[in-house]
Length: 219
Image 1: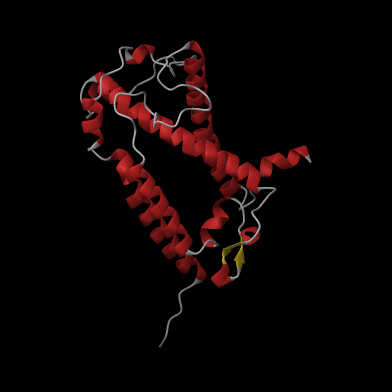
Image 2: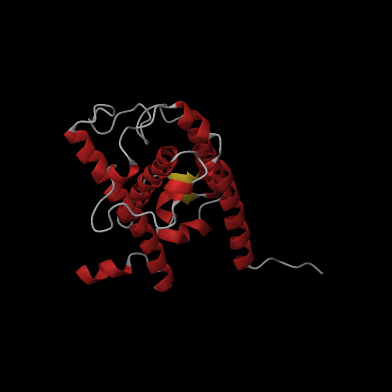
């Protein structure tokens, strides 16, 4: 007899496939090849314990000793790698957090999938979008992420996160007080955003799919 897959199984299959593509596309962020560019680059003269991002109340906080015993070489090389990863994840988290807030009230006009007659306005905010966006859409996003990882590279010998495009008016290599304040703010905001986006997802699960339920107390 024919057996039809339940909607739950279909959802899990699509989600698993999408996650597989995304993980494959973003694996370059943690590939050992990054050691080559780090070791070829001149190291920052500032010790990891005195770098920007060492902030109260924790100060230099590395309880597991990744900086001293990491796999990327000296403590300075380990720091360069982990700081680059932190900056990247912070930037993605800031975009995701802003996207969650904006999409709660606004949507693009037009169709995300004309062939399926699926408009942007039909895509819910939050984790529910995983079940609505077609798998082809997730694959396209994974390809774009992968191309970005392949062709947009960190500039050798420059500060982590410097891709040669500037930073909202800051010259990325002047190490002036204005730049250091801006980069310190970026790290702080990125850390907050990483916690924030995870909190939004957790809240959605706890409240049975109600996105940003806490904001309803403001009317």
